[in-house]
Length: 124
Image (cartoon, rainbow, N blue to C red; front, side, top):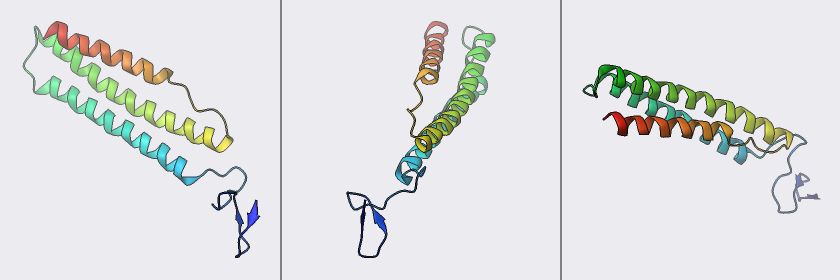
């Protein structure tokens, strides 16, 4: 690491050096933006579920509408939880210099969404 004319530590590329254990703010802010995207997605699913439950006409039966609408609301809640948990795991991994979390939770969420989509197709 070199010293600038002001005496502060800088990296080889001229950027300010980070303290040990510190994370570049760009990465933490990107992780936060991703978590907020998860929350926006969650709100979309919850709103869709409420629409299915209270606005759509019954499908073949009211029970099918309740099952699909409730599933959408629950997927929305799950997306919010997954987003926050992943944000915490990413933030910790960044601070510790560890690998990023894997995609298992995302794949499960996608599988549930596909099942709900098939429910719309079969029972509409």
